[in-house]
Amino acid sequence: MEDLYKYEKELYSEGINIIGGVDEVGRGPLIGSVVAACVVLPKDFVLEGLTDSKKLSEKKRDKYYEIIKEKAIAIGIGIVDEKKIDEVNIYEATKIAMKEAIKNTGIKLEHVLIDAMPLDIDIPTTSIIKGDSKSISIAAASVIAKVTRDKMMYDLDKKYPMYDLAHNKGYGTKKHIEAIKKYGITKYHRLSYKPVSDYKDKIIKE
Image (cartoon, rainbow, N blue to C red):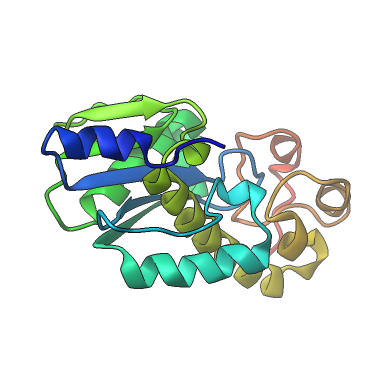
């Protein structure tokens, strides 16, 4: 079992207290925005079972989401839509979303722990590979980002039920790709992604 508090404890011991954990969700899907979250937790924060949001059931994530929202010192969300993803590429779009999330916490952070990505910002950072299962702050951010993006997919699913977005969350499942072939794409699909790019001239009229 990883000590999820290791990185935070090291920083606290150096007198650094306002620590933001940053993670994103939605780099792989064929549709919709990439969403990043930055979460600042209180020093005494404990949440049994919190880990990388992908390893949690939806029910657990929703429960943890409410607890994190209630207990966190600050939460910032950054959302970069499919148009910008197509314009700058998903890697750059992810960095933009993360910077937005940090800014949107509305407080001055002393250190930022980031899941895997290097970020060029004027705050000291530590990039941690698989950070969402190694740092409590990043794990909390992964839950906030995932639940936020999933809600967006549920909304899109109501509008376009044929793509099965409520279940696949925008990823290129067999059902999703079959629907693209049959109906074409929406204005929310990422045109820079395969196989979406093959259907650029088949956008559903609103």
